[in-house]
Length: 380
Image (cartoon, rainbow, N blue to C red; front, side, top):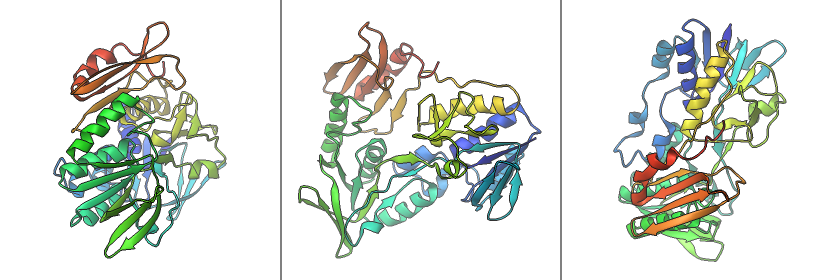
């Protein structure tokens, strides 16, 4: 039997490791359009604080991973088609047969259209290659503008600020990370980063991006302007559904799977940021790790339904740290907020008083273990 994984990001490599724990002999093939370096993608948004150059983030190159995994890894190889009838992945190099196929295609940055002669110079960071280009660009830069005040935008703002740069954050949101945090927590983060030097432009969007004597000028929706040396887009990510849709798989927000992580096509599975299981698309590390363990068992002969325990997420903003365990989407209840000068504790309780989620910021993050034990599993 041959298992083929498309993608060598954290999803693809973690799945390969779990497969090898379960079966040391099954044929294992990985395909990637890049060089196949193994690295933790979350490290991209705090490498400056850690004092790491881009190459120092890499834990192993493709050749090392191939040896460790007893696997065949096709680097710089683009998948052109998948023939489900014959079980072949057709690439720009050759055709690779499979018995079971896993799409670990990840997510890609959301790109919005902007006016102006410098709109195409807005950078995004979603992989090591893009991060390397970003680091080169900011080497001599003093002013950085970030479009997007969400989780990734705030992590980069913290990282860049601590590195000594001036940071401006722009976005339509009423407060930072508004899609995940209750307002009190978002405001606490906003205040802490502002006191450290971040300049916020919230409730506004960038309308035009223009060159400005060796730098850039961003014109915002209220007519104000921001001048900057480097621009970073952190608007968000969307699952990469290109391959899935090309072969007619069911997709929604992500590639729709059952609890075995099998897609609408038998023998084809999905994992990581691209997957949607039980209506959940969770682009975080812990869901990926749990899913990789379950899928490896299924692929090696023991059907294993995916379950998610409570999985608090730590947001990498050391100036004002945050831990969140969001309530299920649409859950009935209310936030109970306790706030002091050093942080916010927000507990989301059902009408019956059951704890369904929490947000801890600042000094309250020390309570993570206490509250994590009380919230229900994300997917039982």
